[in-house]
Image (cartoon, rainbow, N blue to C red; front, side, top):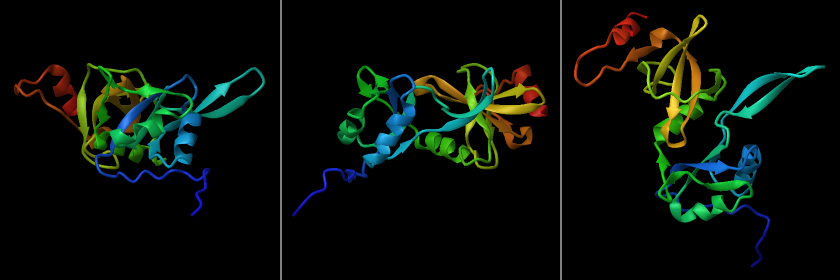
Amino acid sequence: MTTDLNAPVVLNSYQNRQWYALYTCAQHEKRVFEELKRRAVESFLPLYESVRRWKDRQVRLELPLFQGYVFVQISLRDKLHALEVPGVVRLVGFGGVPASLPDEQVDAMRASMTGLLRAEPHAYLTAGRRVRVRSGPLRGLEGILVRRKSAFRLVVSVELIMRSVSLEVDASDVEPLWPRSGVCTQEQITLQRV
């Protein structure tokens, strides 16, 4: 029986697989992602397109939506397959314990990257108008509604890595999330009218 040492290792422990954020060295996200794919580790690197102007030309670049992070779906017992990839610093967590991301959050990010929606990085926000998307590929996703020029954008925050992304949405596709006390603020009433 011979074994090909260059063949990717297929992780067979599908049970207890969860999504985690890998923190990478600066500007190593694409290299880490490619190496994870080569090693057959389920991974996700959301990219966005940016136009950069230089003196003599314009260049379209694909840049990581979450600078410094690549998402992996692994069981914790297989974490070494991800951690030994060159350019990986650590799994994001608290007190040395990796923290998993909700599947719904990663699924929504993956759905938004299909090309139907334009995504771009956004400053991490903790306060503002919280809304839930009622229809479309982002249905059920919660975030903060902001106005940019004449369009509305939904800012979705990944609390674990303290990063946010903004996506174009139609204001008619979102509904406000009310405080549990039942008391509405003027901001929420205004949002409902939009």
